[in-house]
Image (cartoon, rainbow, N blue to C red; front, side, top):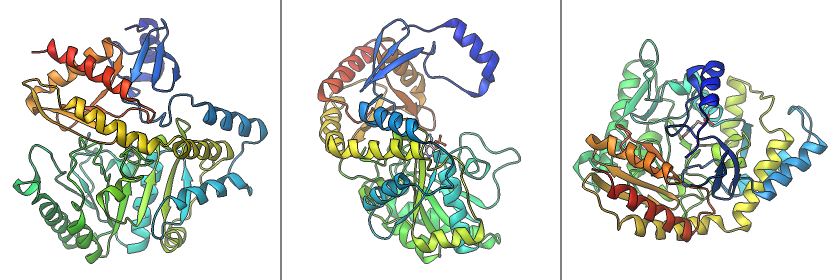
Length: 419
Ligand code: PMP
């Protein structure tokens, strides 16, 4: 594993402490292709974690689309241009019911910020409910829901957090009871917001609970909750930044897999294969209310190059059958992972090309050692969970059975050497 101490020092001096890296020592990656990355010394790594290069690092069709559009025109978003319309048409065609209008942005944080304001605009209320172990982005409004660091001065009073589903300790005491238990927590939070005078604007959640540690509560988990939210007049805001675009294999969107129809969908990370693109998709009535209450303009969101990158990414997902690949390879990977054993392992689960190896929460150090050990052996993964005790696998979508075998064999070797 090659790092570069000079770059580490320069980075600390010039960027300060706010741009953290993965792995110890941090990797100096200089090239990518498909599911592979190369460091400056020419060593190759299997990327089993990066969901930004969704259709594979440096996919030639996305590279070509970016280069072609950049050579022709890139500018702010105040002119008429076909490519944003072509993309909006293609994107909304993938979304069911009446989610038919799009705001293009540059990050998932911006998308979620808009979604919160849409809920406010529609309901005239500010109260928001989210889970107590999540991350939805870094604007002031969105960071108020993100639980990694409590905001300075405490969490704003219009935000209520409900217990996230948890694979090891299901809400309500069992897998079957957890949907009703979650809905009861949401109902109590809504009642509390109303009693405090904030009213209720909506519930924001990731339908795969990706930052919560992929607890996989199963289809129907949100049925009771959706009824509670709708009964209270709020909007359901689905943060599809991680599960969207086919990663779950069985479904193109996380909300489809969980079986509910959100009012607003937010998108980001994988959407343009690394080009900074996000979006908010909503019904025309929601868009109109948002326009009326807030107005919106984004200099870069939806520029021709970004839209060309997003369009090429969507076409590659379709043309290369990457959703189906996620289903087939994901099932195969899960089968291999379930063959692993280690005394500190508590649960192994997955959905498509998302998998989680949950260690007992008091064995977070073993999880950390596994992630570092894998990186030293050329396989890149990551960690999530309340105690950072869950090893998370989330590779680019062209991940193959052979890649899965390499990952699991390497993991077996790493786990074998850990107490
Ligand atoms: N939502 C979720 C579920 C995320 O995981 C993230 C980023 N990790 C965001 C939103 C924020 O996206 P961005 O970093 O593009 O602002």
